[in-house]
Structure formats: structure tokens, C-alpha cells
Amino acid sequence: MTKIKACLFDLDGVIVDTAVYHFHAWRRLANELGFDFTEHQNEQLKGISRMESLELILGWGNVTSLSEEEKLGWATRKNDWYLDLVKEMTPNEVLPGVKDFLVLLRENNIKIALGSASKNSKLILEKIEMLYYFDAIIDGNNITKGKPDPQVFLMGAEATHCKPEDCVVFEDAVAGVQAGIAGGMRVIGVGSPEILTEADIVINNFEEMTLEKLG
Ligand code: B16
Ligand code: MG
Image (cartoon, rainbow, N blue to C red; front, side, top):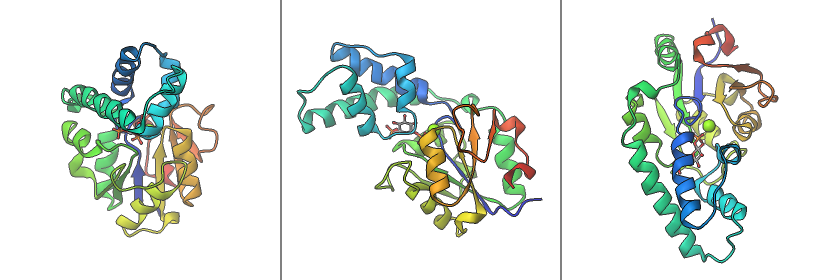
């Protein structure tokens, strides 16, 4: 058994892989501004907000002349292209083992919350038919500070009426792992142990996950 009372999940890279759609849309933006960037560079955009992503990308293309208003215009355009791709998402895109693990949590009365930087998280959860499992959703629409600040996960703990020490965070990004640690929570990394070195444990995917591993 476990003493854990709530699990707080990142979205992109943990529940579903939307990074590929973000990449397509950001790349289109870069191309329209006359430059390109690689999938390797795209790794740096995982887990950070839309406007922080835009600033990084504009830096890669040495685009320094845009006003704040123009930047907002490009961010909106990128989001529209991204949403065109999200519209086509299906439940088949839920990452391996996630659904069974969420069912197991519910059967054991463990609360489930989302802690994502995305402003599109509800729509994505609807498209992949996972909204039903979540007791609380904290995302880019609620937070004022991005990861590695712990705000998103502290709000998730509060929304599920659980103390941080009774929560486990699931994260695929270094900044997200740091956010969970800063919030005083146990953190399970999803991905590579070489990258997520600060996590308490790292799993490859949710097919490996058990209640015992919650701690
Ligand atoms: P949006 P997560 C993050 O999701 C993505 O990893 C990141 O690439 C994206 O910029 C951010 O959401 C904001 O997304 O433009 O949809 O508001 O990993 O925090 O679930
Ligand atoms: Mg993520």
C-alpha cells in the first residue's frame, strides 16, 4: 500500500505527447519569419510557457525587431496552427499505461490533479477522453509563475485538499522535476534517468508504475 493521497500529473510528455504538434506549429512560425530550428532545439521548449518559448525561438532566428504587440500576434497565430493539429487528436494518443494507472488510483481513492503550463490542457484532455479522471486541473490559465516555481503543484495539492508531503508529482521535464521538489513533494520522473537526475525515481513509462512505487 501507499501513504500517498494525491498524484499530480504534468500533461505534455507524461499523459500525451503534444510536443510534436508544438514543434510543427513553432517551426511554421520560424519558417514564416525566414529561419528554421531543429528537433534538438525543440527539446528546450518542453514544459515552458508559450511566451517564453516564443522569446527563445526569436533568439535562435536573431529576430530582434518585433514589438510586444507583434509578438502577441505571432503567439496567437502559432496557437491557432497548434489547435488545428490538436483538433485531430484521438484517445489512441494517450501514452502507454497511463489510463490503467489512473483507474488504479481512483480505485484506491487517490486524488488526481493536472499541473501543466499549457493553456489548452482541458481541450486536450477532452480530445483524448481523459478529462473524467481528474479531480482538479491547474494549468497555464491559473498560474502566474512557471516551472521550476512550485506554484502549479502547490495549487494542485491545495485543490485536492492534500499536504505537499502526501503528493507525488509525475514530470518529464527538468524544470518540472525541480518544481515538484521545491514544493516539498516526491517526484517521479517519466523519461531518461540521465536527464531527470533530481527525481526520486524515474520510470520509462506508466506500464512500469505500481502503487508501491508511489512511496
Ligand atoms: P500552450 P506541459 C507545456 O505543457 C509544453 O510542454 C510546452 O511546450 C508549451 O509551451 C506549454 O505547455 C504551453 O502550452 O501554448 O498550449 O499554452 O508539459 O506543462 O503540460
Ligand atoms: Mg511536460
